[in-house]
Amino acid sequence: MKATSNEQALLRGLASNDSAVIEQLYKENFSTIQAFILANNGSYDDARDVFQEAMIALYEKAQSGSFVLTCQIKTYVYSVCRRLWLKKLQQQGRFSHPVDNLEETISVEEDLEQHAKHDAAYDIMDRALKSLGEPCKSLLEGYYLQKMDMQALASEFGYTNADNAKNQKYKCLMRLKKLFFAQYNIGE
Amino acid sequence: MEDLILLETIEKYLGNQMDAQEKTAFELVRKNTPEIDQMVVEHAMFLQQMDQYSAVKSIKQTLTQTHQNLLERGEISNSQNISSAAQVVQLFHKYKRVAAIAASVGGVIALFISGLALFISPVSHSNQIQQLSNDIAAIKKSQQYQGKLINEVKSKLPAGVKFISGGSGFLIDGKGFIVTNAHVIKGTGAIVVDNNGNEYVAQIALIDQEKDLAILKIDDADFTSKKSLPYSIRKSTTDLGEEIFTLGYPRNEIVYGTGYLSARSGYEGDSLSYQLQMSANPGNSGAPVFDNAGEVIGVLSTREAQLEGVVFALKSNNIYKVVSDYNASNEGSKDIKISTRSNISRMSRKKQIATLESCVYYVKSFDK
Image (cartoon, rainbow over all chains, first blue to last red; front, side, top):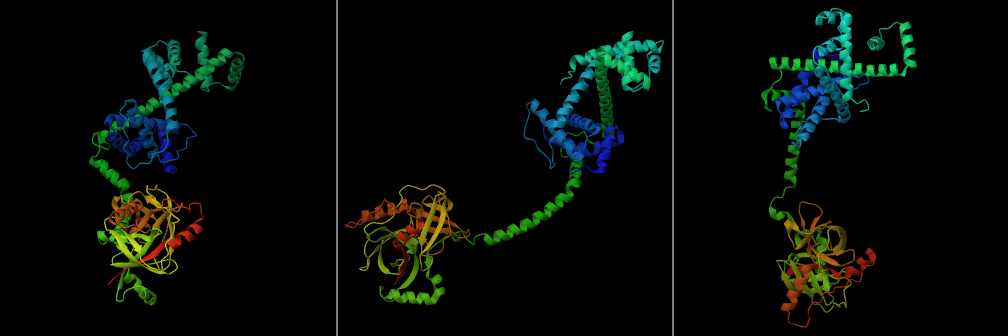
């Protein structure tokens, strides 16, 4: 089944982090996933974590311009969640034969490999930022994530001028890059 | 300090914030200085990772926020219980069309199956298998022929006798011993008819109702005994899938049929019999079942009444048992000797049949 234009619009909304769209996707899909996970030795918390991870995987796909969904969003989300959860069960040695509703599934192996790489990079960056400590972390987040300019950052963090802030930011950035690239292997 | 300026320049370059002149100048520097080029690539990659990190981080925040909102509004549940009412209602709405279609298809199938079951189910257990002997009632349909037959037979029989049952039989000893089913011999005596229409009077030498086998002895001056029979009778059992053929008298003329051995036991696990896949009709009872080599492996006896082509044959080793019973009770000199060598094994099927035909008889039992 091809994704309808409505579904493509939902994907675009997801890619641009539109909270109304995300709420709609959440409402339409979460309880199916919850039912699946509860039926397969999981808890409510597991359902939430797995569902959100699947949404992130879908978000990553939606972001890349070349992405064309070859099935309905609900089928994709269900397939990803199913795979993620069964993998988790397997890792915990609790694997049992999956109990399914009447949902159809598609193969999502490749997408999940891609997602796992992204997820690993995310974790490395997250750890690196956290181990920087303050004020480095906030300064870099302010500049690179919230895209604040140097003048605003200087006044926010109490530097006497933008040049001092810039100098501090440079030192922080060098440390962050060192921490990040120590773990992030380009080849992989 | 120089490094700081360099990095700032790189960021400016990667962020597309340079004017054309600056950009050309920087690209030239980049081209001529591998270290700077390397730094640009590395930093571009790092910035991309930062952007990705930033994007996923904000999506995560949105997801967490959305989850919280929906939970507060009660639009999703944090229940651990799978079959909460909301879930069931939701599934109902989701699948009601499918369920409706499935239910109506199911209804039609149920009706169809019950109709079918009514149609094919047996009226009673006793009807499930059918003996393949010919009752005289069936023959009455061809009254003219029947009349002619009785006239012919009259010469050989005492007056005032009635045919009761009929079937097929075959020689097990050239001296004139014939094996058939016990249920073929419902009367007190029998005559046998060979493939050329010659009739011989036969005595009932032995009836074993339990094994459903009977031995007849041709007692007729017109009969010339055969020195040896062209076929043997198998003592051991036969394998599944063995191709088989039979010759019998479902009509007044000899009829050939083929099939294969489909099970090692007969009706409801009867270990005295095989199950065969072939077509058989009333009158085939008592007919020999041959394998490809022309060895007798069984005696055709019953079929499943409601299933076309499911036929049962008594295993040939039962013949040895009734023969030894007969030989034990018969103190005379004429013991039955069963031939254990088949000399038609390499013949073509047509030649085998031509040889075997004269050893298969139409058996008719009469009563006074």
